[in-house]
Amino acid sequence: MRAPWAKYLWPGLPQLWLDGAWSGLALAIGSAALLNLLLLSTFVWVELLAPPVLLVGWLAVGAVWIGSAGLAYLTGKRRGSDRQAASTEDLFRHALGEYLRGNWYEAETVLGRLLRCEPRDIEARLMLASLLRHTRRLQEARQQLIRLERLEGCEKWSLEIGTERTLIAELEMASAGDDAIDPNSPEISQAA
Image 1: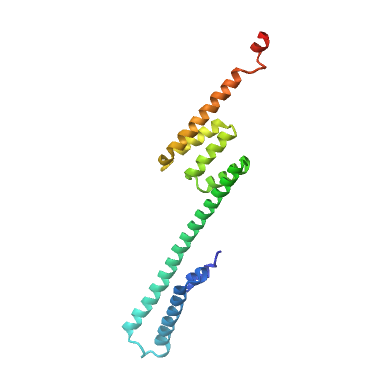
Image 2 (image 1 turned 45 degrees about the horizontal axis):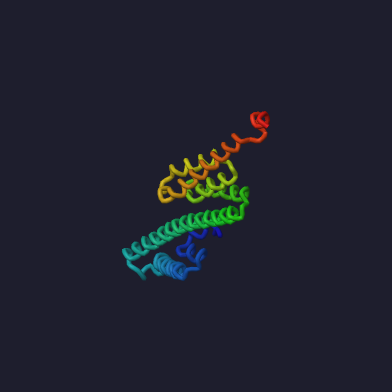
């Protein structure tokens, strides 16, 4: 929902355009009334307002104009970051749904997109490590856990990180045990 850059040319228009805010309408009407009064006082009825009052009026118009544009810009920036936060939250929900269904490839794809947008997302990286463990890519899972432990705020996830490490170690030991008791190995064939 992008509005053209021209919306910044009139005070109150960005709030009115994007939010439909009554305050934007009031600011736009008030600015128009003040500007019309000052234009009439400056060019038509020059005796209507004293020169110091005119100067203060023009300064007020400039301040309102610049202040409104700055406020609209900051609000637009915040709206953009809120939109990105909402989209990363949607991506996380989508990845979680795919993960819970066991759709490993789809979940990994969505988590990859999410981590490209927000590389410091602790929950997404932990889910990726768990997904990699489920798909028996244990070395990659361990690397994700190492990356995860470097992130600020990972302390509250230390129990889950430890659990993942334990599960990875158990899978490695089980895999090593399966290799040791391989029925196709030459030692077992000769003993039979």
